Length: 109
Image (cartoon, rainbow, N blue to C red; front, side, top):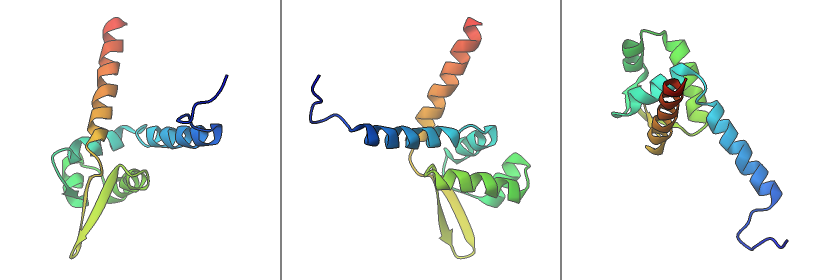
């Protein structure tokens, strides 16, 4: 069987699969999903996330760091404030699809 010119090599496939797995792993904590939902309406400072979640700043910053390292959120410094926002609105669609799948599984159980 010949490989066509548009197919990826096994190494490229492995790299892509690893990147996909890392992105999915960054969504495995409920608090990170909460941060994503909070940011869906626009950028927020850590203090604003702290007020909404009633969680301490170090805990929030730890999860924001994971989301930032995986490219899910971006941060922008303005004077003494750091604002976090979603890097790509597609992440909201991913989260919605996962939530729909969970609801569907609950109904069928």
